[in-house]
Length: 314
Image (cartoon, rainbow, N blue to C red; front, side, top):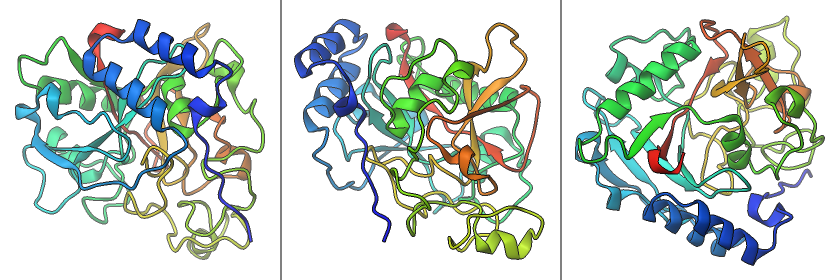
């Protein structure tokens, strides 16, 4: 049977423990982000079970509400989000190399969250508020993040901001070590045989929502992973599969996720997407795989997730 391998970015770093600690101290732009780096550095490799998230409305968020320990999270309520729908939940992710600590959405942004803030739902698969929003362009994903930031209390504006993850932040979140290459294009698929679930192929049962036999039954012309079944022909509700070491769901499969970066900064024609989707060939499921498209493109296989960062640490 295929085995699941857990990857911890800090353990894979070439820096010594002491050097990483000093680097985190030097880079920290906020006490809460310093606490993330120290706590997760010391706990890396000692996985803790996730606890019930603390809940707060976005307009009442305080810096002290932000989680700093592995296994902790913060669920943020959005005006207009239906009762019982998944809230925007944040988990802490440590820094690595030049990447500073940050908070990342535990789940891909859902249709319920998007509709609550944007007053529309562009998704092709409208099956419920907890399914990932798709058919969202990079520009629209950025606007969603801007509106989230606008909803923060005045005392946090200018200190914290929501945005899309950078390509480098996404790599840390998925568990990759520091990558060689100066641009996403140069890093594309350079680390072989490493997937969000580990190094085994095919994916073990419950690894994620990928192109499986259920997909083939509905979409007969698509290439699928033979022998793999996840029960979903296309998108699945977020959080239905196993989380990674940081408690992040669906970093592989379900929908591609927009990132901040240009794929090739020299041309500035397309933005980075990471993570693969419910409809992808094996190479697209590599943790190091990048794909790209124009900022106005909308596809049923593309969504996004948000990060919260300290403005002072930029």
